[in-house]
Amino acid sequence: MAIGFGLVAGLLLSAACATILHLLGKLVHAGPDTLIVAPVAYVTVFVLVSLMLLSAGRLWAPLGRLHVQAGVLAFLGTHSILMMSGRLHWLAILALSLGVGARASSTFDAHSASALGAVRRIIVPLACLLLIWWTGVEAMRWRTRSQAVAELPAMAAGTPNVILVVLDTVRAQSLSLYGYGLETSPALEQLARRGVVWNNALSTAPWTLPAHGSLMTGRWAHELSVSMSTPLDATFPTLAETLSAQGYLTVGVVANRYFCSSVSGLNRGFIDYFDYERSGWQALLQLPHLSQLVDLPLVKRLAAHAGIRHELGRKKAAEVNASFLSWIDQVGSRPFFAFLNYIDAHAPYAPDPPFDRRFGATEVLPPLDHARGMTDAEAQAQRTAYLAAIASLDYRVGELMHALDARGVLEHSVVIITSDHGEEFSEHGTIEHGGSLFRPALQVPLLMFGPQVPRAMRIDTPVTIRDLPATIVDLLNPSTKNPFPGRSLARFWSGGHRDSEQAGAEEPILAYTEQQDFPAHYPAAVGPVRSALVSGFQYILKANGEETLFDFWRDPWERRDLSGEPQHRGDLELLQKTTRSAWTPVRGETKR
Image (tube, rainbow, N blue to C red; front, side, top):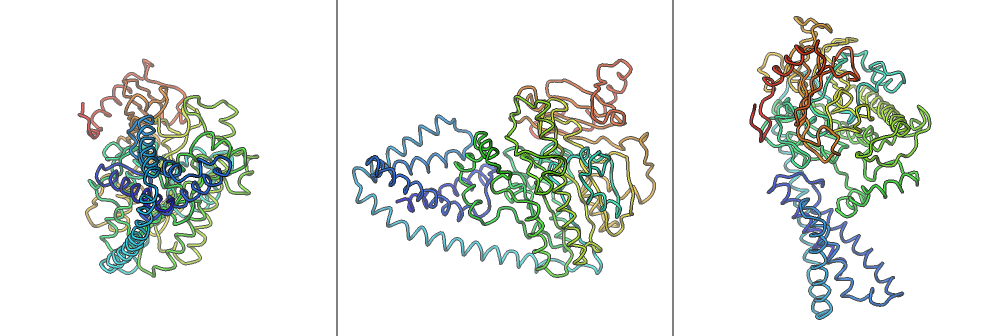
């Protein structure tokens, strides 16, 4: 019975995921193999539950009876599937699940022989159906990949590879590459000598999906379809699609499986895309009950007290490196575009030894409460762990580059290393990221090296990561019309650009974040927040009309709001006017 119920629940969960993603257009945090993985996971869990009930039945006989087990398993399966809706109230989910469980229990109590016989009869057909489906999916996946590779156009000799490395959640202000007092990024500093470093690079958004959407499309965050529950749609072409059309092999290896997985929309144009691993933990964590269980603050606190540093199922930098290097060793000599996403610096911070003690002992920290914020002691402990996580990640990036050098790959590759957003430690009353547009959440590292890129160059002029797709296409095909908006960063060494602090930003650099589930004191809690960097001033506008103005050059930590100072009234009015003209309508809004 447990096997039969598990197979049915797994198929229903797969159908629910497909409905939410393909019919409703909403984001689901599940892998592409859910149809196979979910039934196996449900069968495993349901068999364990059944064995537990049988064991408990030795102490209290009713728990071991068939109709009780049917009711419990039907309740668990229904409850987990209804949790996928994201809209039903928890009391409604509980009531419906109890109703289904009670109905299943009464059916098995009244007709135990026939009901159990029906369950037995569906097990083999369902298992065969899953096996056939699995075989068909694998065959189709192989055929699709083979056909995509075969149809790639020929490429000119000497065409360079492109490697885009995104260090998820790494802020520039915490890197020794940018003058931070502790040695957090020696590998990046060494790589920087081979190319160009931008000292003031800004993201388009303070959280993962819209920032990555800008990296892939060259569009501002407010132009994209994405939200916390909406994937990137096909409105705009992606960098992978463009390079694939030019003949590049394309591969993505991502560690952030919440907002960079193959269902996020970021995988468009990639021939190979590695997100979820086929492992037992990954299978179990795709079940809503278990994934929510491991996310409970109490469970995280117990794990912290037990010394468990890593999130279950988190893909570490060493795994990203191994997956990418294995791919390179198998694909031959055709030029490739690789997108690598690392999540090691994302909370909960879990640096690998010996980096966990690089800047002092780092504790296994319990999850933070956004509504309460941080005490000074908590902020210090979090920063220490964060810095250690960055140093650990920096070492792994250095390892990867050494391995690519040994294979002779780097000498024929344009390498770009950046981040999607930064992190906050209560500098403005907010923690982590996503809820504000202050500079710690937006300023990111950006360095580039490879053919046609000058060595040992530093650029102060503020830039945006939105310009990277246009930059990559310009470096590869400078004579062709660029399909991406924005301006190529190669302009800084191709002549005609005056780089000075006085020049400020060449055009408004925009950022945007949507209303999200944050406490009331967070800027994003009251609606969309916009920012613009213009003429050396960073301007932030909240949905409720509140404005802040900061001197970008003299006040990098944004401690002094200039918006109310009479001597900066002209600057504020200029920012207001320029910002209004710079913003195109946000989707669903009317431009004012």
